[in-house]
Length: 295
Image (cartoon, rainbow, N blue to C red; front, top):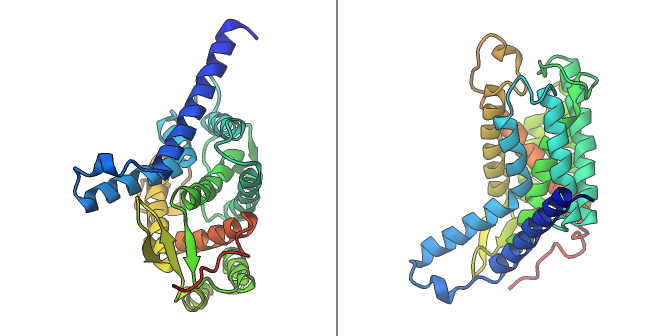
């Protein structure tokens, strides 16, 4: 290994070590040192820091998405350059142990789930990836799977950093069944009709009593789990608007000029978040301990 490569390796190790130290600091906050801030403000600050850290992979990926010139870099098409960047970030997170191997397996599952959906939707013309790429398969650039993986990565990291627990979670087999219905409807609604709102009603019933318990700073807070799904879905809808604005992909009505993504997509993203949450819960082996005893 030459000297330049050795220095680069040390630098990346240093960043990983710094992030591990940051995680320890976030999980054991210096409450006394923050006492000069109003209680609500310091809790909001710490919540924001944990959320930003949980978005590490998503942030690095989408910064590249928005910063990458449409013409690509060094003669490499944009979609191919994004794939190489995403692979490098994923490998670094695994190598530096910012992501465990179990979590990596979950990320791989999100790739498969996302790619199958993308391949079907582009085939029937729901949206398209207009630019050339060597890494396109069935009309879908392979980097697109990382968009779904980014959602899973965020949920995995936020679960750990915010010390998430779930009260009154529905039986896991019911949650898994609802997740399968959500995923199936993304395919079948073009053939047998859109049953999204029936599935939404089912989800509302399943999760009506479910509460997410999390720790922003030094005390536990609670939020209806359904509200968490809706809020995450909203931010994904905003990210989709930015992605289509930069022509990463386009809907048919955006071919001539960009227009806002239909608000109805917010519900689709929220349902996708529920499906992702269910996968994370299963693959992190929390289904046996997901029920929190009553106070």
